[in-house]
Image 1 (spheres, chains in turn cyan, green):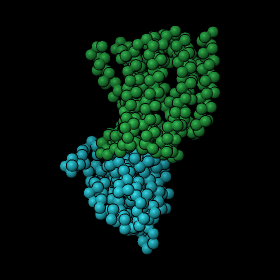
Image 2 (tube, protein in one colour):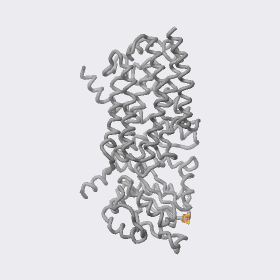
Image 3 (cartoon, helix red, strand yellow):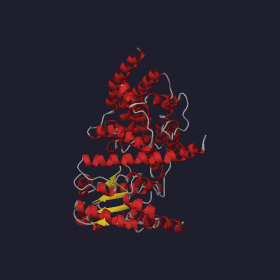
Image 4 (spheres, chains in turn green, brown):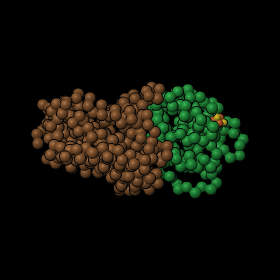
Length: 180
Length: 300
Ligand code: SF4
């Protein structure tokens, strides 16, 4: 199984296609969501790089978390992330996803997104400008081309660790074990 | 059946899908230029499909969900088999027979129905809304489409696409000039079939999160996108055959189909979206009325 995954991870054609076609599900939490429309529309035109918005998690490749996550929202994010089809990538957007940012002592937001879902690329800044966002996408593309963006595999292998972390903050866990 | 025909039979779905996807990619590019941005490369859709085919997981919700995209692409490929593609010195028409136009009328909706069944099983409310909108809209555009085909059948006293192509031997005899009423009705139906802007309420991404395919991911979606490209190609070839006198070689075919493809594209770029009942009112009012006038004229 693992050999198979590694072989597929290093498939040059597939990685090239994955790199040039990133379908984004922008999960608009926090203030950072306001920077997504300019990135996608005429001014910065992310479609040049094959980056398009998608409407449902089933179709998307990249989950873009734009800012702080309340615990209530984290539940939905986990659900969304698990419904996406592998290979899938996560971009954490803004300082809030890195270390809590200006919400670091808040009572109901999470601090490090990486503890709950595997983040492939962080874009720092409060909030990052569209140039920064596009730069983050390019970095993600480079990682995909090198076969290094394996966060989803990491999540599958360490599901117990992630689940324990998630259940630590989500007290009323009513979801199934894995939301296919 | 000659060996050449068998080769074409196998190759044509791939060529057709590639051409259709390339057209859709170019349309994305043109839309981008109209919106004052640069846009993706023209082959972007093909990259998307390669990526979707190399996805590693694909969730299924049941047998019909699994069969939906498969049946849709089966329907499209079988439509392709009955449409004469080239009629020159090196003709490509695979299974054309006397009366194939009537068969085409039926078989073209097969893919949409299969998709509707497949999307219906996913249990997603957005899919259900999208399916009901899509089927309603199909009833809308089928009326002018069928009227337009009946005009052609009555006029040439045949229901074979090949005979209709043969009747359009010179440019002045193209049906676009000879039966303009039929052409107008058919092109209005074409707008609905292509699902471009005024009539894209079925797939409205911001509203019902892309409608019928909203639960499809991975390889299922890849199959559906391939189907989309191929079906666009089939429809364009059929319209070229019926109204632009068919095509003698591949270059003519590409020129004519691309010219036809630009019509719904340009109409789509500058128009907002119709609600379902507005779309139905549109289809059943003007194109149908024009079609009926043409039918009366041709019967007289
Ligand atoms: S990083 Fe700054 S802009 Fe982004 S969500 Fe946090 S506080 Fe808002």
